[in-house]
Length: 146
Image (cartoon, rainbow, N blue to C red; front, top):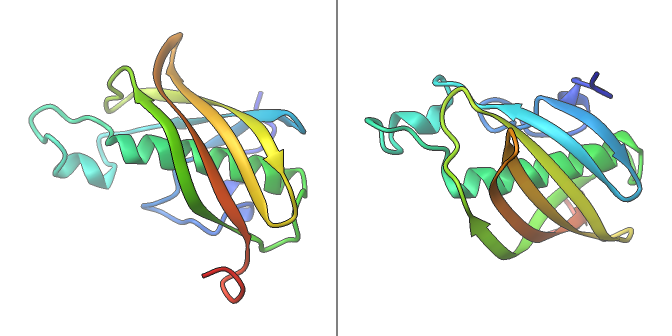
């Protein structure tokens, strides 16, 4: 059972660039979120249209959005805070994600401060590890983070 599916109240992202369907669980250590990719996702039209695959950068964005949404759900930051992706490290793509796949993002909070978040994530389809990465986001609002 999901903790919440009201992701739009937690992130400023909107369709077609909102990549979290639900937060399954979360606490101060991390979170588990899901996203089901469908054949209607905009990038499939041009990313190997004869053999559609979720682009790797979208998988990283999906994990980062999941981690940010969970922190917002826990009210770790002021309401309306924005998370700006600043670094991405240790990225590995291990298996393709295709239309119809539900991705489970397991995100670990490595460091959380008032102005930044460092997280690590793994993206799975079933028990198959598809991608992993670490990233840092700067936290602020549109006026003070550029």
